[in-house]
Amino acid sequence: MDDSIEPSHDEKTANENGLSDAEDDKKDFILEACRQRDLDALRIIAQSPGGFLTDSIRQQAWPLLLGLSPSSDDKSESDGAVSSSWKSLPRHKDEDQVQLDVNRAFIYYPPNQTPSQLAHQKDLLSTLIVSLLRHHPYLCYFQGYHDIAQVLLLILPPSLHLPALTRLSHLHIRDFMLPSLSPAIAQLRLIPAILSLADPALWHHLSLTQPFFALSGTLTMYAHDITTLGEITRLFDVLLARDPVFTVYLFAAIILSRRRELFDTPRDEPEMLHSILSKLPSPLDLEGLIASAVELEGLFPPETLPAWRRAVSRWSVLKTARRRKDGGGMQDAQVGVEQGRVWFENQVEELRWEERKVKARKWVWKHRRPAGMVGAAVLVGVLAVLLQKGPLPGPVVSGLGYVSGLLARWRR
Image 1: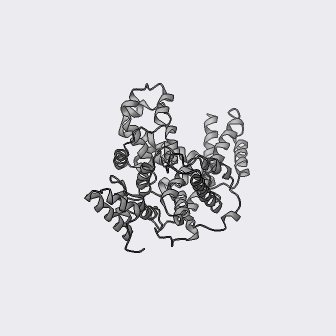
Image 2: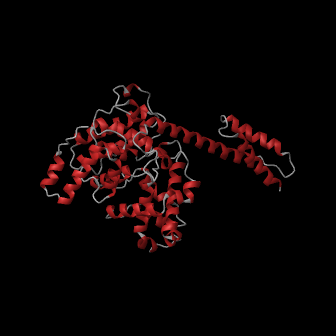
């Protein structure tokens, strides 16, 4: 990268409008961290008040946090570089839904667009998402994905749109692109676990309310719920800089910030509590919430939460992207899209195995016999059902032991 980064138009305008000396110094510090590719410094800056300050600085910092070069020279096929042949690739099964969502895009920002400008933006967004899905057809589109892609499209230069979205999809929001919603629900289970430690009284007050109210925010990196470009880009600074689990801590911080409002609503009205929590507070104290979420994660790291061990898959992006305290971990820039695909496929196989176990339990229950009947026939039947669905992954002995345990309990 060129060591001399010319201030862009919006930086010059910001200076002309009167950046404080501290902000001007911070800008220089960020750009120097970008030149040095100092990811640790960028991660610290991202959570400081104001984050990366301007969109032109984000064009330098975001690609680095995603493991790319801010230069347009990074066009490796494995990282999802734009291919002129994407239109010739087979159609993805979710393209109709993509178009429905793109038709509803760019509602709040950017402002003052003419109809032709809006149509052009939507065409770019559709092309970006569809080209990614055709290059990586195993990924499943989810509603709200277009909100995330929209932010990248508006901030990053065109040469980085597809590489950035490809890495984000494989290494940051991969759980939401699986063929099942259960990994996304598993992430939500962390929120009550955090609240139980941070505020037991509030946790008890909300215990009749399922954490599905947080799905929209966590699923879309809050891009579906925040309606101003300045706020969502500021939030993306910290979401791209920190581990993916930070989105969960942020929602926990949002809940804690509304403690008084929530206690004013009776505990036995979970629908009302759900309605309150499914909408972000207004006005949104973004800097305060970011600071609170950072503190929460420091006090109650995910590894200390029972739901982390019980509900979150070892292949979940929450765990594969988790950095160690010594600075290492899977989210370092050298981790590539292909590794993300391996983790994706491992988790898909795990989901299939869980589905087979559920089907086996239902089959055994349906065909249970009174105590004293020959259990071997049932055991053989269960294994036959499983084998019809595909080869048994993992140690077969553990599966036999599980079913045998069921039979033993029924005989008592």
